[in-house]
Image 1: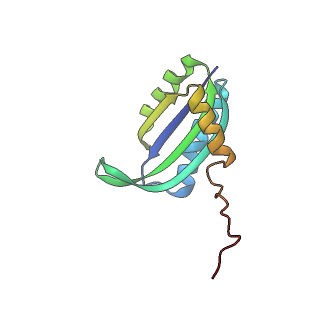
Image 2: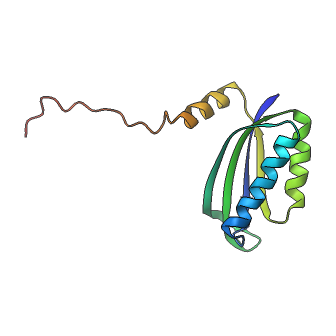
Length: 122
């Protein structure tokens, strides 16, 4: 099984509950087809770089998962069929991207470096 990341942008016309319902639908689709969800990150409502369907914002959601390769086509067909999904991107992760993703999830990039303050005269 290969590891993948997929980002979807949902239409901003959805309520929070409706957006969660869409995300639950796709998570269930993944698990029903043998995928193992590693991490889900809801980025919330963000401004788009350019208008899509005359909309300037969208709900972003990132999912990291392991799945057989033949499942990706089925997943992307479901994304295309759902009118609430404005855009999506699914990528296959290599070993370096998997290592980076693991460090990001563990919070290694959020730790501040300690600075030495000893011997500083005021």
